[in-house]
Length: 458
Image: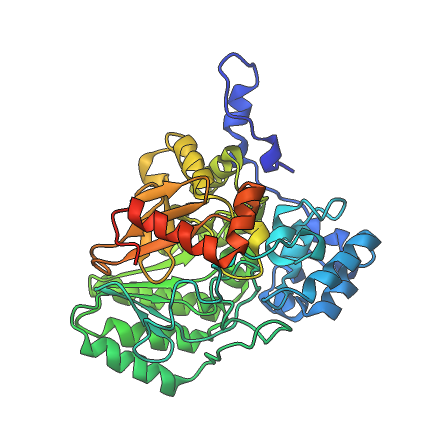
C-alpha cells in the first residue's frame, strides 16, 4: 500500500522521480478489513454495505476494545482506556477506518490519531482553550443556527455522526456525554428546524446555507430532501452545502444507500433548474483515507453531477508535514474532490496534542503552492476564535512566534474587533510555557500582542 511516508518531492536528478510524481494515483485496493479478527470472514459485498458499517462500528470503549484487543499491543489497549477517561469526545469508529489503521504501530498511525485517544499522548491544555472556541452558540439567533457572515448561515439539524473525531470543533454538542463534557442537545426535530427556516426567510441578505451538524450522512433520505427543497424554495437562498465526513469514513453509504443518494441527486437537480448551487463538502485529512472504495463513491457522485469539495484540518502527527499534505491534495484531485480549505486546528479542549503552530501552517502552505493547479490548491485558514470567521493564515495583523500569539481582524464580519489564536504550549519554550501558566504574565503577553497589532491593550 502506498503511504504518505513513501512520497518524496520529485527530484529530476533521480531516476524514480516520475514514479514519485504518480504516487497519488496508487490507491489501496485490497481486503484490508480482514486483518481485524471480527471481520476476517466478511465478504467484500457485505463490507461495502452501509448497514454493516453502522451496525459493526466501535461505539464506546467496550466495543472498541473488543474489536482490537487481539491485534493491538496490550500496552496500547491500556493506553486507550486511559485516553477514554480524559477525552471530551465519545468514540465511534467504522469497520472501514479500523481496517485502515496500522495495528503493528497504532501509536503513530495517522487514522488512529484522529479517532482513538490514548492517555500517553495527551498534552496539557493551553489556558486559553474552550469547548466552543468559535462562539457558534453566541452567534445563534435560534437554536441550531449560527449566523455570523452577512450572507451565510450554518444550520445544525442533528448532533450525531457516523464517526466521532477527536478534534471536533463542536465537542460541546456532538455525540453522547463523556466523563469531562455534558453536551448541548441538537437532536433531529422538525419543529426546531422550522424556527431556523423562519429566521432564514426573514433575513433577505442570507444567500448561502451550510447544512451540517453532526453529519448529514446521518440524516434520513427524506430529511435530506425535505431540508434541501425547503431551503431552495426560499427566494433569497442561492447556495446550499451539505457537510459530511462520510465520504472519508464510510464511503459505502453512497454505494449502497440508493435512497440517500437519490435524495441528494434530486435536490442537486432541483437546484440546477432554479439556477442555484447545491454541493457536498467533505473532510479527508490524510492520504491513507483515500482508497479505491473512496474513488468509487466519488465517481458515483461525479456521474450525477454532484460537486464535492474538501475541508481538511491541520493536525500534528497526521498531516503537518509538506509531503503528506501535498500527497493528500493530489489524491483529492485524483478522485474529483476539490481541495477547498485547510484549517488551523481550532482551540478546543482535550486535544492539544493535535494542534500545530500558525508558523507550521504557513510553511506548509508555502510548500504545497505549485504542487498542482491553482484551482486545486486549498486556502490555508484560521477560523478566528471568538467568531471572526475564516481568515487566510498569513493575513494576521501581528504574530509573535515566541509567545505563540497571532492577531487577526475581520472587517467584513465584525468590524473594529480583533481575534487571537494561541499556538499550543508544546510548540513554545519552557520559559514561555511557564509564563502562560501564570495569570498575570498571561495578561501581559496578551496586552502586548494587542498593542503590537495596533489595538488598545485595555
